[in-house]
Image 1 (cartoon, rainbow, N blue to C red):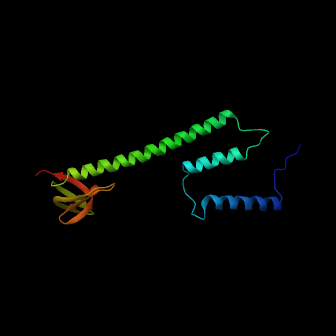
Image 2: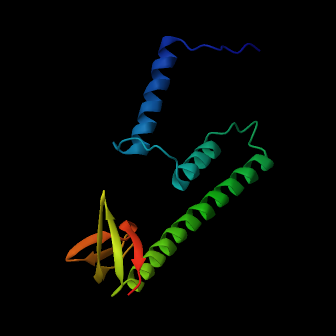
Image 3: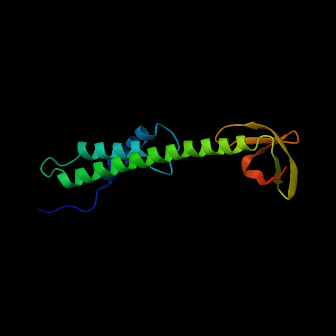
Length: 145
């Protein structure tokens, strides 16, 4: 049995049309993403299952390995989200602990000393020093009273 390794122009055009239609359906007209997420991984797996050769189905080992990869990806994504939440909580707690304390703010080349009179909590907390808000990351020193 001979297998053709090249496509004629008609097959090439038909294949390109199918690829374009598939990409458009996946993207919905959006700009392409730089990274694949768990939804993309699941779509690829389902597409593989739908288009596998019935005379030569995917081996059980391959399927189990891909499902394990999907499960790992999902758990890593969940851990990343939880670490982001934890980081926000820790930053807010740190900012709250500065309330009423004298700090040194590094604003470019300028160092501003003053008492923290107000905070705004969140993932990126703000501290008010001398009537202006600064990012918590700009606090260089906490000074003794």
